[in-house]
Length: 213
Ligand code: TZP
Ligand code: MG
View (cartoon, rainbow, N blue to C red):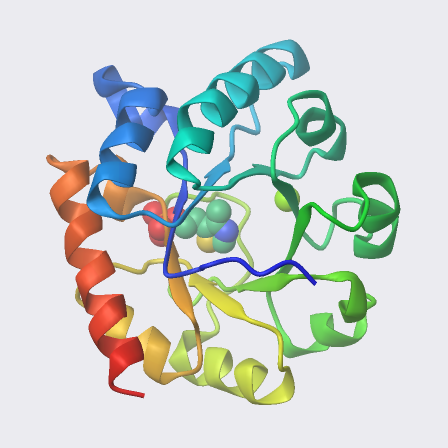
């Protein structure tokens, strides 16, 4: 399977990036040590999404930071992105894998323990597990599972896990202690006054937590 450093996984949000914009936010996060970027913009047109994905691939590839496209296998392929992330109501993981091939990264959202039995996990490179905490960032998010839920899921799978939902510098270490390899954040970086500094702080916390294992 494809190895991916999940330490600090930025999920983009156009609204929360404000006047700074998504590209500037992504560049700041990369300077701060983000290890993966996911393009997420459920309201964008397909055409705009492909343009945005292509631009982000161009920005990120020189830094060797992978660009993952949320939900959209077609957009990921059109833009030659490094991977795609599917949720429980998106295309099934095995169908996504068949379309993207072996060499692109495939992530799958797990919102509750039962989701582990709903897909063929052998085709997946990592799991996005959450929401850990309630978050205003995703209106249709599943009920929060808490750190206990994250821990239960982590004990049931050997796949790398990135935790998501309400995570920030104050609780990132707990997510790693619960079994995640990294933290996936939207507002903690996109809405930060200084996204580079916010990312650097998260990266340092994750590095220290991993070193202490
Ligand atoms: N999926 C589950 S929760 C969430 C997504 C995309 C949003 C997380 O946003 P934040 O601001 O990091 O809580
Ligand atoms: Mg989705």
